Length: 171
Image (tube, rainbow, N blue to C red; front, top):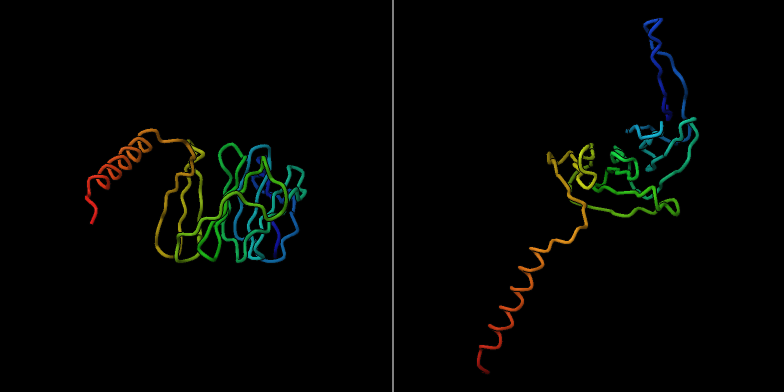
């Protein structure tokens, strides 16, 4: 029904009651994630993500996807969102530097089918896993750290290639 319902347990009664209804999506809601501070993020068939404040207000709308958004996940610190789409891609949204609707910080395509599940590693916010209808699970390392060992190997390789080119006599 295009809504997100928030439920609260009533232990004295032994039942759950609806504590709120979040409205705003224009089509079926497919994914939901809880975030620090009582916030929620939702994903929808309408191609959008919505960030909901603790009071149930829609704080932001993310509209960068061109297809159905099946899933959404918040990083452990709540500063990043990841969303998976019907087109096989996923996007990363930085809530610290969010400027305007549709501005994601990364758009990655790999899967050959819809990304149906996405989840951050609870112990390393640079690690993310995606699952798809293409029957693949991919683990992504999104860190941007310098790798000194790799840079040294590349430097040595380039020096070797230059020396080998210098050793070839003119033809």
